[in-house]
Length: 158
Image (tube, rainbow, N blue to C red; front, side):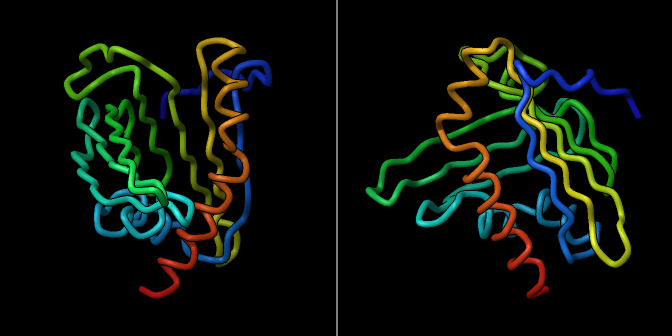
């Protein structure tokens, strides 16, 4: 695997937790569009659309809907796909590594088996402290934490 940049608290946000589901199911939740739609947006938000082309240079597209009905489309590009270990994606690039007009962050999801469960680490890497702070103020910790709880509940039903 490609080594990651060293964690920088001035630029990065991290959510780390051990969850009581197998790594293969956490991976499936991140890589199966119908599963992503069930957990990706913290309720009462919903994910109404998801497309995945799971390969470096491939796309990850979602549309989230607010409780008021406003839709927020997101598009990004996969940079690295290591099955059941690491998924790296960014909204700084569009499919085919084309530059995006308004980059925000690069996401890194790493998975490690811990007993019968999974150590789940989600990193959001930002270009500057202001962007990191904006993401923190948007509710990164709470939102990504709730989404992880929803992911776990989703895959426990599989």
